[in-house]
Image (tube, rainbow, N blue to C red; front, side, top):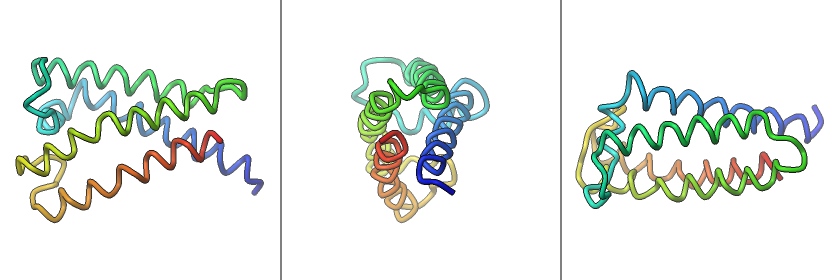
Length: 127
C-alpha cells in the first residue's frame, strides 16, 4: 500500500473517530464527558460538552472530506484541538473522576499518554 493511501486511511479513521466521539458528546456519553470538564471552565459542564461535541463533529467531518489544498491546515487545527482539550484529561486525573472505564489513577494517567499520540496522528496523517 502506498504511503499516501495509508495517510488517507489514517486521516479518515481519525475523522470518523472524532465524528463518533462528537455524536456521543450529544447523546449517550454526555454525563461521562462532563467528568472531563475542568472546574475552572466558565460554562456549565453540559454546555461545554455540547459545544465540544459540535466542534468534534465539524473537525472530524473536515478531516474526512479534506481536499489536498486544505489537508495540512486541517491537520494542524485537529492537533491544536487535541492540545486544547488536554486540560480536561488532566482534570479528570487530578480530581479522580471516573468515566469511560477510567476508574483508577493508573488508568486515568495512561489516558494522558494517549493525547500526544492523537496530536501526532493528526499532523502525520495530513502531512
